[in-house]
Amino acid sequence: MALTCGIVGLPNVGKSTVFNALTASEIPAENYPFCTIDPNVGIVAVPDDKLKSLAKIYEPDKITPAVMEFVDIAGLVRGASKGEGLGNQFLGHIREVTALIHVVRCFEDENVTHVDGSIDPIRDIETIESELIIKDLDSVEKQLHRVTKIARSGDKDAKADEILLSRIRTHLDHIEPVRSLAFDEDELKRVKRYFLLTMKPILYVANVDEDEILAETRGNLTQRLFDYAESTGAGALRLCGKLEQEIALLEEAEKLEFCEEYGLPEPGLNKLIHRAYNLLQLQSFYTAGPKEVRAWTIRKGSTAPKAAAEIHTDFEKGFIKAAIFKFDDLMIHGSEKALKEQGLITLQGKEYIVQENDCIYFHFNV
Image (cartoon, rainbow, N blue to C red; front, side, top):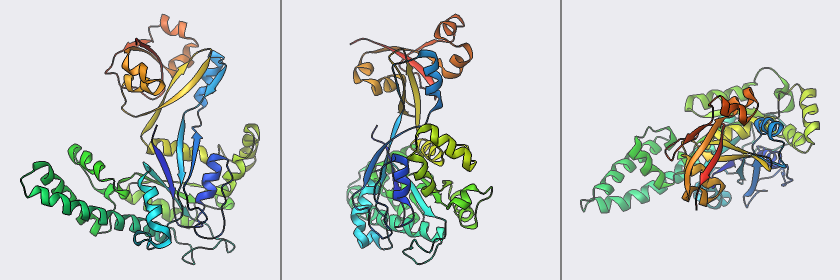
């Protein structure tokens, strides 16, 4: 699916370290600004214990997880909206992603420089947000100028755009992101056509040191970030990028031992991937058999034919019906035969909205 999470933040906050951990790759993470210029793209498997449970029942030749895409975007600096630090290029990369993972430094380390000379997570967040707002304001001004001319001719659609863009401009003038505005259904459709940077959903990631990740309580810097996120309606989580990169390069069994040694229930990246998955409004459904057990990714609210299209476009074109059972029911009863006997496999038509953890067999004709 063409849905991606862009990893953003100031230089030297740990963006590339987090990206390396996500992709288990070795993109350079240097101690100077702009070590990342072209965006690095990584396809990441979504951790899913349900696949292991399904595999125990079907004993397939192959297990395939759902995947999602992350983009490591170079660090933005103050003045990026005016071209500072290759800002226009970086902002263009942000425009191309669907949602934002904003990595914020919440640890002190005299060996890692900060572009502003001190550690202040709220200032850092506002620096990035301000640059995106300024860029959006410029974009809105241009679009408003265009639609206003058309609206004068009596065009009702252009008039509606003019009213909405004027409202957005006022909001941006108050240094507020577009995502914090409330829109009705029609307005939301219009806003999506404007491709505004601050409309993208965002998740803040507090990059902390090892001492804090092992502590039961958040440090002061991290707590400030979480309070800010809550006040703006955004999500937040904390992880130690350096520690996660070490975990990511281990074999699966070693990862479990490492986490147990540090008293971690699971790698922090698993939480990040799941939170990013939700941020993109994604969910999984499953197909299962002796050849393959597989998780597929769809947008929440997708119909059965749209889910079928993820497997093959012919499945959508020739869709007849979908045989559906619930993962939890399969775990309780142990086999499809038992589900049939209990009447727990249902046949659904084109209007059915696929639910999280549905297991599906598609019937189609081409």
